[in-house]
Each structure stands twice: as C-alpha cells, then as structure tokens.
Length: 384
Image (cartoon, rainbow, N blue to C red; front, side):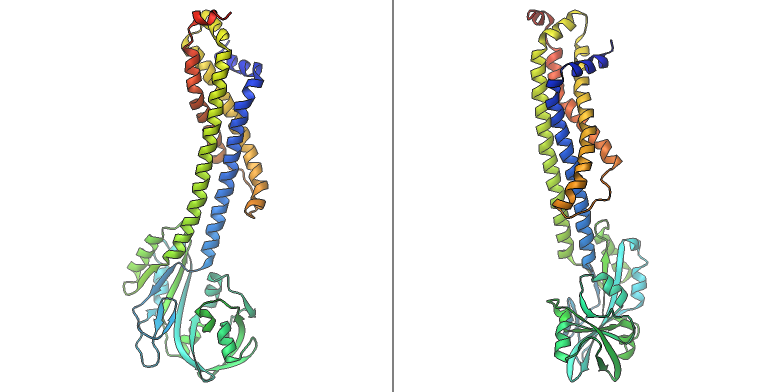
C-alpha cells in the first residue's frame, strides 16, 4: 500500500479527530480571504475617492500681490505679476509619467470691478475644472459657453445675482449660468469664467497664473511626477499637496495593517489547533505506530504518513476556505463598507490561499510528525 493511500485511509478512519484542525484551517482561510478581498476593494475604492477629490500637484510661478487663490497670490492694481504660459500645459503632457496624470487644470486670475465692487475673476477650462472638482454642487445650468459665468455663493449674494441674470464685465455682457453652493472656502468669493475669454478680455493672451494637476496617486510615483514636471518647467515651482497625499497613504496603510495583523493572528490560532490536535492524535496512536514500525516501516515512512495527513487537511481547508471566503466577501462587503463587489473570485488569491494553508499545516504538523517517527517500536508494542 502506498503511503499516501495509508494517510488518506487514516483520515477517513479518524474523521472525528480530523474535523477540528480542518475547521480551524477552514475558518482561518475563509476569514483571511474575505478580509483581504474586502480590504483590497475598500482600499481601491478609498483611493479612487481621494483621486476624485482634486488636484494633488500645484504649479506656480514666482509672484507678488494682494489677491490669493490657495497658494497663489496675484497683484492688485499697479502690482507686478509672474506668469506661466499656455504652452506649459503641453509640456506637462509630454513627461514620461504622463499616463499617471488624470487632469490638468490651468487658471488665470485677475482683479476686476463688477457693479462697483472689486472681485477676483478666475479663468478656468470648465470641462477640466468640473471633472477635477466633482464635489462642486451648483444651482443652475452647467457652464459651457464663452459667455457663461459661474459665481461663488458669497460673490452671488454680494452682487445680487443668480442663475439666468446678466452681468457686465469690462463692458461685455455675460450670463450667470450657475451659482456654487457654499464651499466654506475662498472659492465662495470668486467669479469663474472661461479661460480663453478672460485671457482675451484682460490682455493676458497665453498667460496662466497657475496650473493644478490631479494624478492617479494610488499607482503613480508622485515625487517622480513632481520631478519630471519640474524639469519640463524650469521657471515654475512644482509642489505636491502633501496633506492630501499623506492622508490617502495613511488610510490605505491602516487598511493594509489591519488586514495583515488579523491574518497573522488567525493563522497562529489555526496552526495551534493543528499542532495540539495532531499531538493528541499521536499519543492515541502509539500502539498503531509501534505495529507499523514492527512491520518494517522506517522513521521516514512514519514521518511521511503524518505529514501527508496534515497536508491533505491543509489542501482541503485552503480550497474550501477560499471558496467560502470569496462568497462571504460578496455578501459582507455591502454591509460592512457599503461596497458592491462585481466578483470576488481571484485565481491568484486561490493559489496563495491553498499554498498558505498547506504551508501552515505542514509547519504545524512537523513537530507531531517528528514525535511520531521517534517513537521506539519496543516501547510502543508494550501498550498492546
């Protein structure tokens, strides 16, 4: 009889003893697979949400002035201003890591007088700006045309304007198509217009005050992107918005750390169950092992039989745990993290689940197998 057949028959004959380590491995792998799957999807979803928050790279020239938009300051009347160029947008899109860039949003800032009030006009590329700032909510229609104006909430109240109203800027008639909801930031005071319109109307052709860049930072090397943009734009200051990136990384790292710690604890528990159960089994099978040794089985044969038994337990527990864990993740994700998984089945995860369970059981069963192979046949036969 082959040794693996003997090991299989031993498992079938001692089902009540094998059930405990099998269930331990099954629970450990099931929990690990479901936790890993949910954590991975949560991390991806969270990172995608962060990527939708907006710019994480700011490109500015050297400037002085009185008006500000975040880190950018522009001069009041009579001041001096440094500018970027429209061609800089093209240069950004030529860097090696250009595929890691989601949006490039150029802006021009200039003071203007509307209805006797001094305001800050911000020229933007509306399609790029609205894509980048998906959290923006506004009353009215989406601004599209060269004569469309988007007002911040405080600017709209101060000017007494709302969606559909006409407004005269630098002698030209424009239409307020929408008003932003309260943002709780300086954007509430701004007047947003089409970039080319502002450049033409204020004699700023080809000039930009600053450029915001949104990169896919779940996969991109942000410092490398900053470096490459800096090389492409030697006269600009390129900085990563560290707080946004740091927050993203911290949350994703916490998800990962929680998953790793949980998997380690579960694995140790399962290994302990296998170890204790197999040691108890070896003590109960002392007479059986003695008979096998008296019939000519060598120590390595006993060792191989015991290790084959725990290997079969590991393979069964790993395969069953992967299937159960994948199914469980589909059911638990919507309740735990409001995630909907399209499919939790992952061939690579299946492979590592089975391999991990097999490695775990073999490691836990190594000492009991050694103890079994070390049993003296004469002493063992004394139990008959």
